[in-house]
Length: 357
Ligand SMILES: *Cc1c(COP(=O)(O)O)cnc(C)c1O
Image (cartoon, rainbow, N blue to C red; front, side):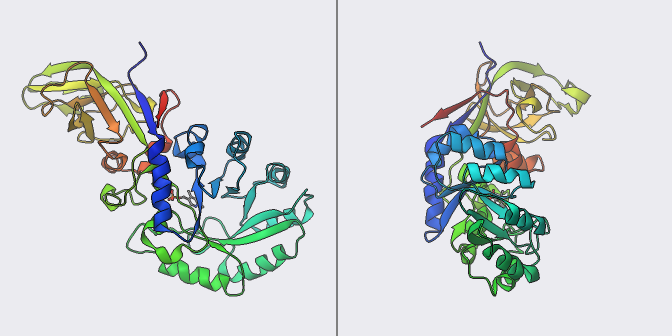
């Protein structure tokens, strides 16, 4: 028997989420963001369920090549552009669209020899301060790019830092509008949060990532509760042991949880080497045999413990859902002080993954 842990991916949820997203931005084309191996879901498992997308966005050349060689013929956008001038041979060979965020990349494009012009996304730094041209320099960069025979269509791109919070997008939109004053180009700005909550950012292309997978861009499950988005990944396991403990007994490494009185504890075949967060404290929600209960004690490499007080019928072999259809990944992430993004993309390679329609 294999260890009872597995992840199940609902491919119909993925397809429906893309449809739902189109409903939020009916006039925009969609880059489905599949970086980090499709946020941990596996690009080769999921891309066909998203094939109604207008393009795929990612940032790893290996993933771009994989997608092309798997048969995707539409656009592929490199969100961070190329990392060295040598990469441009791959950009050309695999017909990739590339972000351009720095002066050196324009020079590299000017010196490149392509079989056909390459479409570029001119990235403006509107306040995130990671990548991109300052708003005051964007017009000049656009002019330079426009004059290159190596460059095909140019789209203006920027990325929001606070689209998921009360701060919103106003300051960054002002910077983008300044940058775009003298640029005649389509625009691509919105991540998941802006797609859901800031329709005036949608323009020509949107770039949703996390909402494709049915998790919340804000980390708050209630923020997407009524959005129509469905969780794609369910991580499940089973109870492999049950302990009947008495007052003063302690559970797990460090003995960090001690029981106050008689208590049933279940041991689940899932630990941090499966991608479950080790820093999830006692009290993190977990679904056991139809009931939401809580974890107790320190998460081990291969196991964690749960309180069976509310799960009277639970026994060895009872089903456990770590996150998924019954328990939003965002609820687990919130308890562990992180985001669904991190938990999904950290699913460990040792966990067997199956897909369902
Ligand atoms: C990751 C990423 C996205 C998608 O972000 P979500 O919050 O998952 O929607 C969009 N654009 C860029 C540049 C990114 O790096």
